[in-house]
Amino acid sequence: MEWIIVSLASLFAGFVDAIVGGGGLILVPALFAVYPNAAPATLFGTNKTGSIWGTSFSAWKYARRVRFKWIVILPAVAAAFGGSMLGSWAVTVASADILRKALPFVLLGVLVYTLAKKDLGQHHRPLGDTRRELALACAIGLLIGFYDGFFGPGTGSFFVFAFVRLLGYDFLNASANAKLLNIATNLASILLLGFKGYIWWHLTIALALANIAGSLLGTHMALKYGSGFVRWIFVAVVSVLIARTAWDAFLR
Image (cartoon, rainbow, N blue to C red; front, side, top):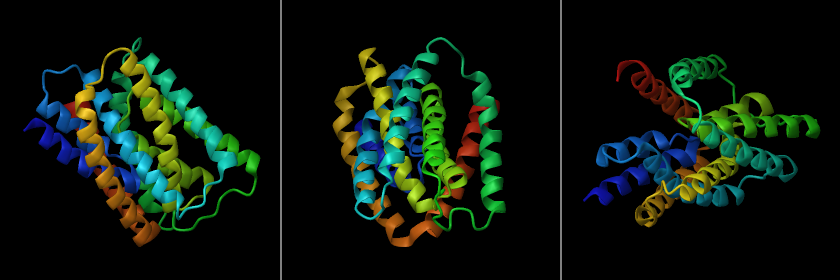
């Protein structure tokens, strides 16, 4: 019965994650609710083994409709992988308490800025300077990759916002490119946590298949309805993230 519950959560997580990121907001709490006595690192690692498959299939489907600027995105993917590895190591020697308390306010700033800028992410206007775009993309990958390895909630949404705000992408293209960086950060965490024995591999197939199904549906809807649809899903997901992270930081 437990695997059915977490598989349904993985399905919905894949749907949300494919559009704008934030699938961990759904699957991670479901894993904690179903397996309350498990080590947190085990549940975080197990979540990654399901979500990476959905993210990968979503990226593949986006690639058929969205043009990636590989000279920029590939180095950014490498930076995201390195940042996630470094963050995963850092969490073994440092506490994330300060970041946990700051996160709701950071997300609130992202939400307010997005709502205030009505045309933010509606038009795809990348930077004309490839070197500058490359440097910013790598910085995004490194910093948010570190955050994903160290803490993690809302990583996909942070990637999307950074691509929109700093690189001039529309929400659709930002979401597509964010998938590639998110694959790298997930892979880094899986390698590190798997090496340390923190993953339940027996749940991987069920979580992965459900996540892929949700991801393909979410990607289809994002491509069909465009940047305006993705923007409002982004606003909804960030709003829920604010409530969830504030609860975890101050009320629980």
